[in-house]
Length: 595
Image 1 (cartoon, rainbow, N blue to C red):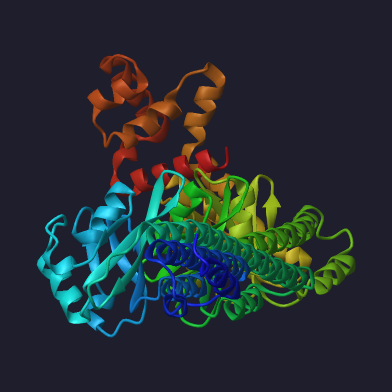
Image 2 (image 1 turned 180 degrees about the vertical axis):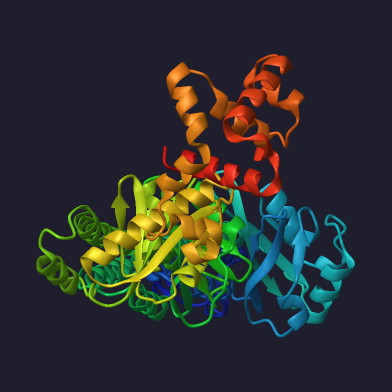
């Protein structure tokens, strides 16, 4: 080593540049050694600076929470670390490609919207192989699959040298980080390693930001769900308080409509409208109601929603929401809660109605059982129920096949002032002076409502307990007459039945009429145990046809002929004449009615 060596060492220790070292007189070997030491020291300083910058970058990324902010910070730091013109980042998508997500230093809109398929261009190859790639001159580098869109975008941006490294999480590549220059440049292994290290930190930061975003979304969803539950609970409590406070169906419908910001229509189990708020269908949608009842939840019906109102398996009615075709899950659950509250209201209404029906039914029974026992007490009981029994009333007796008397009485109660069951027969009092017209109206409405023929006998008008009881007896006879005459589903008062009505009226002596017409036959059967009366009835029922009559009686035709001869001897030869035949048939009917 020459005498210049100490001087060179002093300069190196002071951080002198290569130019300063070159001005020291020294032999070539010593100077080359000093220059080599300078380059080594510069490389170590640069490496220390890069590592410090990498550490600072990782710390900065760890503090960021927003994904977009993380991505922007990554590309900006990459550009600073490698001192390049442009840095950018692409993320892989579900279709197997990688698309440009963030750029820094880019001026080309075409480049910023670029998408690469796997294996296409430098970035597509990095995304496919999970290995870093670098090129000093991308436009002429045939190692990469050049495509028209990629080459046009790269040319538009003016990029020449490109370095791309994978953003990896374990074995999964989530994207590519790039550093590029608009001039030829060979990226050193140290620069590739530096960008790769930075990409590892960046991938973790991206994953953390995504996890935080997902956690934020989950928290927002939970918060929205809790708010919806609280809103639903508040609405449920408010509606329940309305019901328990005595609100009617229209009031509850208005409250539900206000909560859901739509129209509400409530129907009962038979489809009758109970209340509405806002616009809505006049008829309930039967198919949607059946679907809702089967599913136990609200179902869409075009632009409306329908929910069955249930008490266990029993259908109490339905509630329809209009004006909300796109109903969110939270509002749908609120709508379903409204149906539960509506069920509570309808059950309370039914319980109250049943209790009132029992009270009214008891008054009907007492009124018809012993009208003379304490008329003043009966009148007072009526007044407490809002019924003036001293005013004129039509008394109706009702019968329906296939429907319980309780249901028939409940349905009839809405069409009169007092209804109940007496002597296994439904009785209805209507405040009118026209029993016939009232009976026909009741029969028609109840037949439609119950879906089966409802027969109604009527009498009156009657005022006071005694007259009402007498009118009921007359109405019951009219009802029996209609049923015996085969006129189920019809209605009549005594005046509507013509001669039969006169016979059934209070002024007619029915037993005397029957006795005078059929007496000999009745006496003969009673004395000898024969069946002449039955034979006479079968003969008229078969229109005088002996063959059909013998089949009806299950005897030989000669037996029928012999019995008719005996009847002729008892009633006279003219018993088959039209007038006598009519009287006989009428007497037979009345005898049957009288039991």
